[in-house]
Image 1 (cartoon, rainbow, N blue to C red):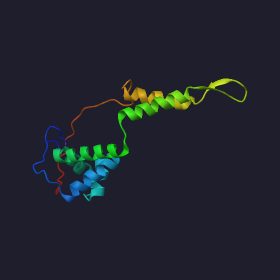
Image 2: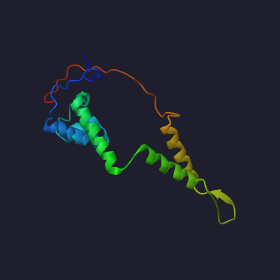
Image 3: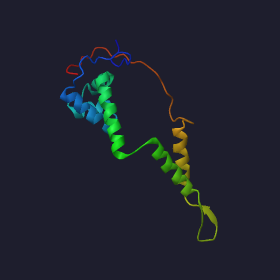
Image 4: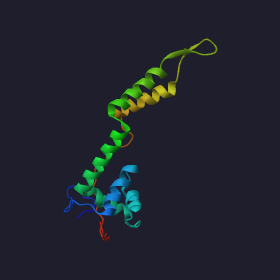
Length: 146
């Protein structure tokens, strides 16, 4: 049986322990399960496996989703607001200005290109890495207290 098999969840109990609650709080900081596990008080040696197991639990997934939503709402960040800001930067960056020699040039080519790159990524026009779907089986390691 795979320790990170996403088809199985082991959340029998809806109430989270203090460590699990801490894991959820820490996970939304950098979205690194291993680091969040350590910061939540789990053993560093097995942090990656512990984090993976915790992320499989539906009750933990629900708490993480809730915390993500709260974070987004608190910052008033939406996909639409980010896209509008990117479009604004592109618009401003592509305005022509006159340089000291009297030549018409774009205000900021690098900002315009970066804005276009971000819009392209949002639209999945290209990807920086290949999406790989795989299953990893880990045996011989016992994790207690998860």
